[in-house]
Length: 68
Image (cartoon, rainbow, N blue to C red):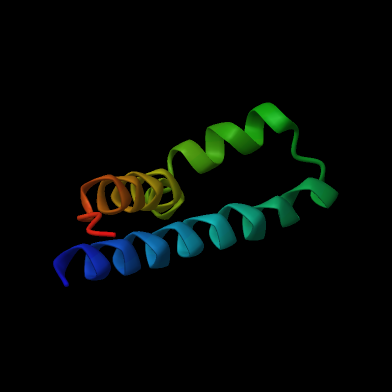
């Protein structure tokens, strides 16, 4: 049960981080370059939710007992 909760938390964090990164792409029409974009999102804590969520999901998948 704990691994399922860990997976769902990781999934929620990954979705939140991914949506935030896509949402910040709205700065491109204003004239922001790719370098400025990556410098901006590297300073935003909510953009780190995407890799943290992926890591939590990988841990939950790898540690889930396979009793098939």
